[in-house]
Image (cartoon, rainbow, N blue to C red; front, side, top):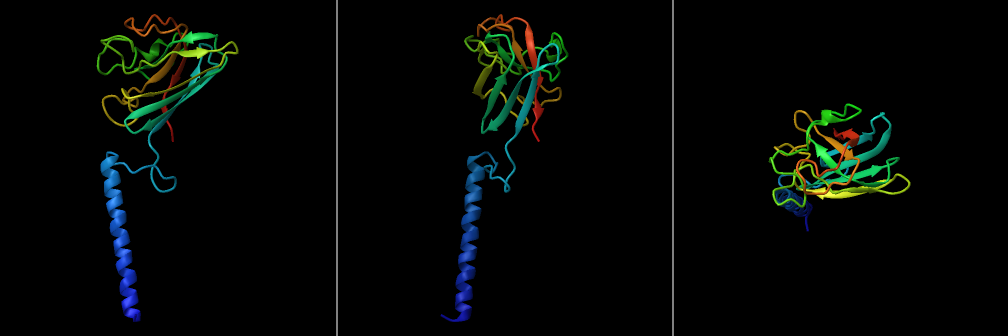
Length: 196
């Protein structure tokens, strides 16, 4: 094979490689709603959020991480130093946590105007989450994926103009009763911030 023929063959393989890569990228974008998968150092990570949960005295009692995973948001909450028992957990419509009552966080995040409760046939609110169980040492952990909210733009975004907050209540949510599942007072609150 001559030098020019060898150079042409290498160039042809290079062009074909780029064509295959372009086809892969096009297919990936089509399958992932125009977002490349996350590859550290190569693509942007999916949207994420964090919240520092504090009690009425301002003492930190927990942390939360929120991760956009395709069409759902994965929420992980860890509590420490909270009274034992089962507690209601909700996303509230305003990103403010003014102690001691945390009423500044507003009502549950509910852009579709549904009724409260994951067991309510007219519900749930977008911000209704499962209960969290706090053990005798004051520790609790909750992991859940929800499809009714997003960390991206849109009508169900937790990063809308006034933000949103996570609230832990003193009692269990009965998952049915409107407007808050008889879950009692708000005992911890954390504004959901965009993770950098």
